[in-house]
Amino acid sequence: MATVREKTFELLRKLNIDTIFGNPGSTEETFLQNFPSDFNYIQVLQEASAVAAADAYAQATQTVGLVNVHTSAGLCNAMSNILTASMNKTPLIITAGNQTREMLLMEPWLSNPQAEEVPKPFVKWSYEPKRAEDVPDAFMRAYAMAIQEPAGPVFLSIPLDDWQKEVNKEIVVRSIAHRIAADPNRLQEFATLIVQAKNPVLIYGADIAKHNGWKQAIKLAEALQAPVFAAPSSERTPFPENHPLYAGNLPFAIKPLADKLEGFDVALIIGAPVF
Image 1 (cartoon, rainbow, N blue to C red):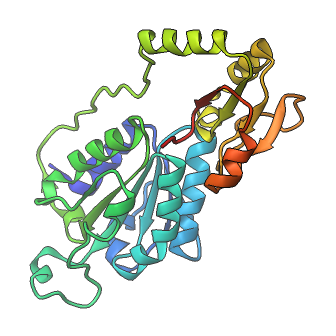
Image 2 (cartoon, rainbow, N blue to C red; image 1 turned 60 degrees about the horizontal axis):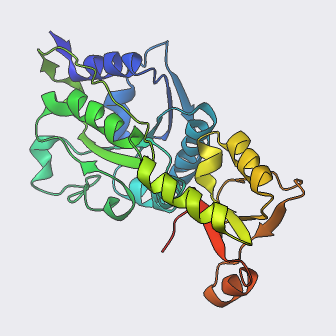
């Protein structure tokens, strides 16, 4: 028999997650006790900073970031950068401890009576396992939800006594596809519109940079000899700003944006939210 904690770290190893960012409190101590030597824990001074650091790490390494924050107030501290990670489409697993299960009914100090509700607007999935033995499986689902496109943060609330419970089940690592491809019929429609356009313009968004698409983006722009605008408030640069076809950033307002695009007969938008 192994503990929930041991099984969870076993799963994280199989998922190649070995770095955890956090600002922990007492409800996270049982997770961090006897921290395994083959993992790195990056401690920061505030929960929002922990999420920001994990966001940067996940984007730089193109992996799922793992963040460990404190219950209730700590999770609230993290919310601003959970929103940012959501906008960035960064795959993060954000965990927060909760009070022991036997005390949750009384809503004691250092508990979060509605832990799943707090981050819901800005995460793809928010969950507190119903049983301690479900914690490793919840991590597996959280990983799958975070990495599948469109990627984004997910949240797990874990009562602090769950980690020490014994569990007699094997860890199952799911096979997860996280690539998507365009519909070939739709691609043909776009290609026809572009070929027939007299004055096309390209609008590129941050997803191009996130998915290492700069080379293809440059190739398309040069083939069309079309100017390239960066979509409004792109969190990553989608096109080299020193390229002669780069036309600058589009403004974050309808009328000024429309003025910038006046005269173009077709706008092809790639890697940015539309409508």
